[in-house]
Image (spheres, rainbow, N blue to C red):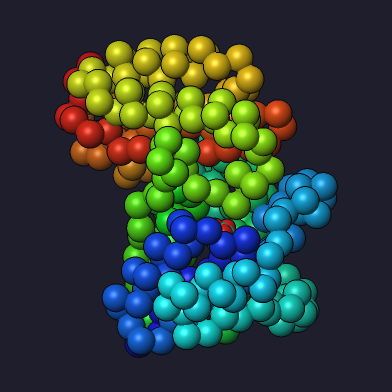
Length: 253
Ligand code: PAF
């Protein structure tokens, strides 16, 4: 059994949790580190993406990786790129704000699967829509997911957090505070209201979306939805942050 943990590097405890989970599945754990240009709609964002290859090797190895692989662009895309479609769910939420982002993610993940041929691949729930879409294309690879790892104050760990100042990090905590409060409500309308209200209380947070979705198809959740999840995205000082939490109680309209 070979387990692949695809990453874009700048590893943190969230990635280490994926690698540790991978090690529970197999003794052979490959961590790929490739900053995929196809999934960046903005060149500046691609250039600014944090990179720390030496530290990545250390953190991946400490967490149990048996191989840390840095493919080159030409390895992944040797010829004409066959872009994968992300379908209707791929154009919602993250997809609406970041056109072609998910097509880029699916294309690279598919290439990594073709090259490594893993039995399993591990992804974080932090990018919940990405996780959903990857499951739709993984035909021969079992997808294993790991809950989001948070800092003590609740902020979801993300490579992009390195761009936040101390003060901006404190402001960013509004996201997990809003999600925690909303997901404990047992009424869907109340939950939505709480989400909006708490997010609006932090002036530096510019909301993109705050929704409660049905995990089955990413439509707006209804009382009858079996599994519901609150998703939030927005910016603090131009830095895009996303997070999500499952509704913890059965919600009613
Ligand atoms: O989640 C990420 O880090 C990336 O989107 C992934 C899955 C490694 C594809 O580049």
